[in-house]
Image (cartoon, rainbow, N blue to C red; front, side, top):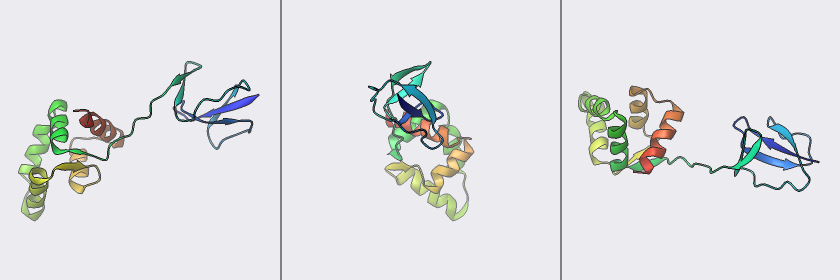
Length: 133
């Protein structure tokens, strides 16, 4: 009998006749089991198709601003950038007004995430949402 191995989220990671696969949870499967790892998720004891979401690392400035507007974050972010003092304020305003993209790892983006209290999962969701606009 084969074993399937899934992670804590139920995503199929591997299958075969081995006893373990790292820290993944094992489950007995029939010998003809051959689902593609990463494309299936265990839900209520049954394997269901799973689409992997790739989180974008950048979005267009229009998409990013629209996401902030639709989520209610825009006034806070815009006011903060507008009121930043000194050279850092000048640099932030230049990036905010002249950039064509919002990059996830830019210092200004990370500072704005802290300002609106978004953790990594929140940033994933916001960038994924922005990419659909």
